[in-house]
Amino acid sequence: MRSKPDDQIASVALKPGHKFITTLSEDANNTHEHVTQEVLVVDFKDVVAATSEVLKREQAKGPLKSESFRLLLPSRVLIE
Figure 1 (tube, rainbow, N blue to C red):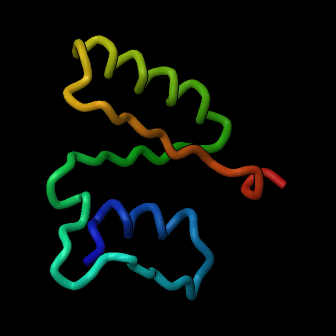
Figure 2 (figure 1 turned 60 degrees about the horizontal axis):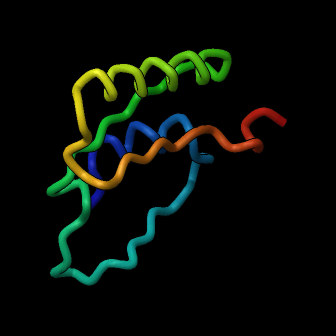
């Protein structure tokens, strides 16, 4: 089961006709069902500033509630 953020990312980051695959069994829980996930889409020229702002805001909240914090940034393919 895909989440709304998956669809938001797919609409701007993947080629038309892409296919989603899963490595989870039918009875397994997807991460998005129990872990908060957020999506921020910005123009490429704003990636560094937006990333910096997100990190500052998260740091201002205090210690992270989990041991994992991931940022997915544009790949080189997008700028070639």
